[in-house]
Structure formats: C-alpha cells, structure tokens
Length: 225
Ligand code: DX5
Ligand code: ZN
Image 1: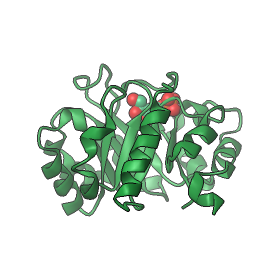
Image 2 (image 1 turned 30 degrees about the vertical axis):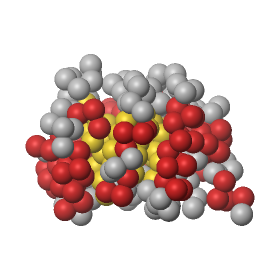
Image 3 (image 1 turned 90 degrees about the horizontal axis):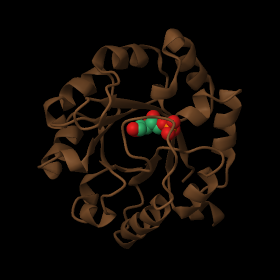
Image 4 (image 1 turned 45 degrees about the vertical axis):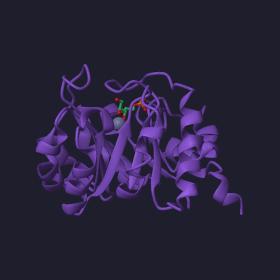
C-alpha cells in the first residue's frame, strides 16, 4: 500500500482559504486533515461546522476530521453531515469507545481512534477490529508547529506488530504532529500509512512540491516486496 499525505488545514492561511484548498486539490495529497479543538479536551479552540462545510464545498479529496473534543459522541452525525469522510475520536475522551466507533461507522464514515503521546497502544488491543484508522499523536494535541516526539516511532512499530498479528492490513496508522521532510521517511519505515503535515506543507516555500516530495519517499516495508 502506498502511503497517504494529509495536509492539515489548521496551518493554512485563512485569509485565502479557497486558494489553500485549491492548492491541496491540485497537489498529490490524498486527504485534507481537519482539526477540531474545543478548548476543553485541549487548551486551544480551532474551528467547527461552518468551516468544515466551506472546505467540503471546495475539496475534491476526502476530509479526515480529528476531533480533539470532550463528548465527541454528541456531534458525530453533525460532523458527517458537514462533510467528514473519516472521523477520529480520542481514546482519552471516550468512556464508551466501542460504541462511539460503531456510531461513526453507522454514518458511513470511516472510524478512527486518536491516541495521545502518553497513552500506550496496548489499550487498543480489543478495539482494533472496530476501527479503520489509528491516529498516533506525535505531539501533545492542541497546536500546530510543535516538535515531533521521537518515542512515537516505538509506538508505530508496536502498533504495526499488533495489526500484523491480527492480519488487519486495512487499518491505517496515521501520524499527526511535527511531521516533515526531515523525519517522514523514518516514520514510514516504522510502519506508518498516513502522514499528517501542517506547518511543513503550508509554511513551505513551495507547498505543492513539498507534498510531492513527501509522497515520493520510500514507503514502509510492504513496498520493498
Ligand atoms: C495538533 C493537530 C495537528 C496539527 C499538526 O493538535 O492535531 O493535526 O495540525 O500540525 P504540524 O504538522 O504543524 O505539527
Ligand atoms: Zn490532527
């Protein structure tokens, strides 16, 4: 499987959002990553439904919605209606994660679990079959432009082994935070499938070329066969 690139809208220039979306549409990127923050689960507030609807109206690629909010189960159907194709909820924000994953799948969206840096991947053991994507946070969620936490590489390897043991090849491992050309290859080699890239794409001198470079990197082990 070829890895996917998901530029994070959080790092876009909102004074020209339509141009930024057009740029991603034209590029080799695969998805849009859309970060929703509530000021409660994380110490920052980003954007919600109206902006998601605006992005959806212009986007020609799937939208991967990352909910950094408490009680995400209250808003799943609304995010789906506003344009989400993938919806990830934080394991730390869900008392009934299994139920919430089913709720997401029932809307027709892909169901993802996001995992904070301090949360061990072993906690996912009994829900891997019920998820389409695991988003491993490689920074503490809440802000773009932070430094990649290198311990994430061990978590990627562990999760890849857990998926391999269960023959769950179709579950994506997504890495979110501090990803750029300086570390993308090692992240892919550890076993990642989806790279979220915010600042490294939108703050680059030539974002379309940066996306192509991220896309062209040698991907994880399956590509070597
Ligand atoms: C952080 C967000 C990320 C963020 C990544 O809380 O979940 O998706 O946009 O931004 P960069 O790539 O700048 O670290
Ligand atoms: Zn995110």
